[in-house]
Length: 69
Image 1: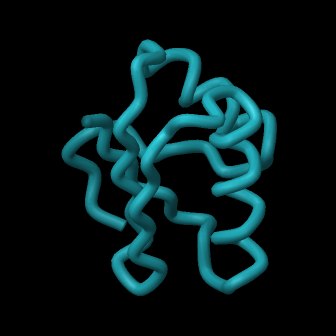
Image 2 (image 1 turned 90 degrees about the vertical axis):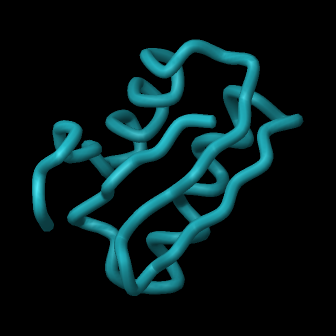
């Protein structure tokens, strides 16, 4: 499982855009998003780098690991 902190995620539209971006690169991905905590947990066979690239392309750059929001 890949965990991401997404500081720029703050509304339902953001959640939808993030979900769409991740599903576009892996339709089989299981995605659990916590909007209040600004986190996403993704179960995918893809490498983390591919998921990060999809998030960045959608405008949601993940925070570096262990960085508070």
